[in-house]
Image (cartoon, rainbow, N blue to C red; front, side, top):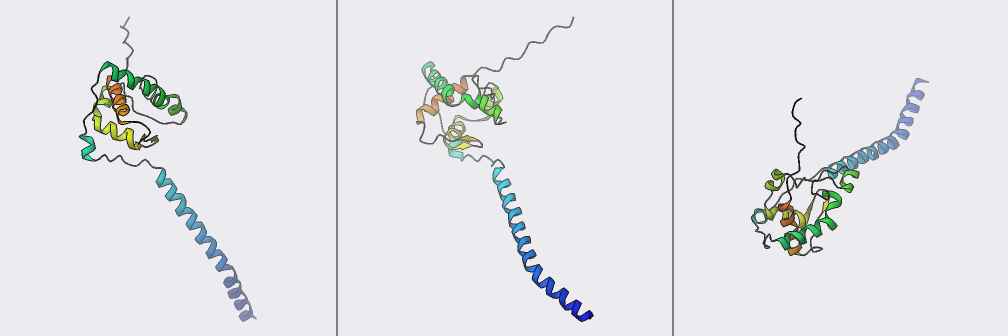
Length: 161
């Protein structure tokens, strides 16, 4: 009698375990896939080739260039970077993005013209690259405009009463 119960138990395990093992394997694959997707969503570090960092602006920062850059910025960049270039564009706020504040001198100092050109061309993070969509001269105009942005106005401290 005990032998029959033992054999029935073994038979039951043999019938159940292959399905259970298969579902465990599928669950493991799903977990791996979810982990890979999470890794893909992490921001990738920006690596700019040295020759791109050293690239010089091919367009002189004239009044005309800055104005051309302002027009491009207004139509192509302000939705995320904000009308003032302060990183507070409507789309960026809705999508909970944090573009750089170009009104801050430190932000502008952090990147060479070549680095900005590279980022404009290839994109970074949520920002799509302009590649061939925008002509080189237009990208240089944008950079001249960004360089012209005034520092953000800080509220004046009120004197103590």
